Amino acid sequence: MKKYTNTGNKDTRSGFGAGLTELGKTNENVVALCADLIGSLKMEDFKANHPERFFQVGIAEANMIGMAAGMTIGGKIPFTGTFANFSTGRVYDQIRQSVAYSDKNVKICASHAGLTLGEDGATHQILEDIGLMKMLPGMTVINTCDYNQTKAATIAIAKHHGPVYLRFGRPSVPNFTAENGEDFVIGKAALLSEGTDVTIVATGHLVWEALVAAEALEAKGISAEVINIHTIKPLDEEAILKSVGKTGCIVTAEEHNILGGLGESIARVLALNTPAPQEFVAVNDSFGESGTPAQLMDKYKLNNQAIVEAVEKVVKRK
Image (cartoon, rainbow, N blue to C red; front, side, top):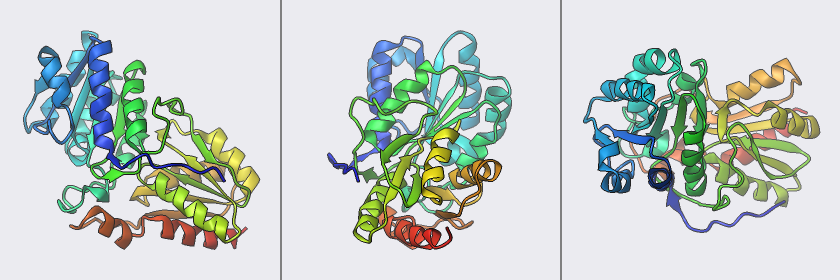
């Protein structure tokens, strides 16, 4: 299998900040709005260099979404920034009515998603956001795996016309994708490693865990094909069906509720085209709790060991 090198742990939210900084220099229509979390969203550089294009909205997320929708009418490309919980659950009505239904060119950029928000606990650890966003007609949903990919995605969505939900995280995680972002195309899955016995499809922080799991499986004589699904909607159905057509079974891995996430989207694709055994690595319909990101990923079985166990189970069902 192809080997990947961790060039150093970085937080994906810093990738967003770096991408926004670059957009500030190259696209004068890009504007940024923040709900009192400039440091957490790494928006300081954009604010310092383009104060006339930065809007501190305060703890008023609904107003932020409404303002962003309005700015698109004048040709601006607004990037909103706050925690994933506040970016979606708190303002779902505004996103549905003013952005999705109205097909406004707003980029909803959400940090601190999933369990890896850590010690802030269940009230801040949204595990339903992908489901909420993917069900909105016309909404593009992206969940990046590392710093480089988050930077590339941030730049790419500025060129994409239409509403986008960009999801990233708080903790430092392995940085292993191409620095120039050449492997990032909206709606196109990235085949990381070819295999013949099982397909592992992962998104976000679980992509690196899937690569680690694939190495462990190789030592056990199981050949795993690993695919990074960074775009959950529109989903690259062709890549999924091609891989499962070869391997005959699949494991999906995500830092999200088992209900409504990537795994369910893939199950629908398989049911409509090529039914195959599938196992899910995800949070089993529960809220999170306080703890370090590593502790929580272990407790809720969102790690490479859980992926290995799921693979061993699914290959027996072929």
